[in-house]
Image (tube, one colour):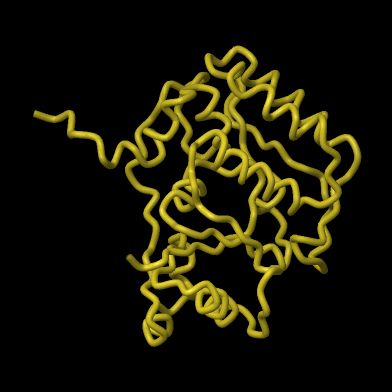
Length: 236
């Protein structure tokens, strides 16, 4: 079996597709030494409330002259976000199942850097809540000299990857032929076909934090991320 690797920037309480990629690989590398970008998923995501999907945004400033791993967190944001999450989902069926583990992350730990928070909660959700055994690494653990696409290639070579699983947006700039020259197959992840789940406040939205899925479906969450692909067809 080829060693399967994915490389992504850490996002704030990401949507289910992010964890679908984690499920598909043996090793997942956070690339948080990349430049911070505004109006992206690094410091914000959506939750569902009675009036629809709304942004939950960590106020980290607008400067682009910093790496993701250098973005510092302001005081008080975690308490405010937890109040909003609790207000939005406190009545959801499975909220009590996850309350203690998430409260510990939001309220009982002081976080200085955005990257540290993002990476930690992604690891906890993956391992403790979704049961994944994927190995997590940080790109800063490696000795890298190249930039951009070549940096990704360097990472893959140093991990012994035979397969690189990438999100579909990378099709705009990544050349699979270059990776093939080094014995690495590029697989484009598809986010098509996710089934809807019982979600409060219709109409249904896929593009929300995975917390929405966990709070509404509990132990069945994995079915709605990857398990449905292996489920028998319901059609006659």
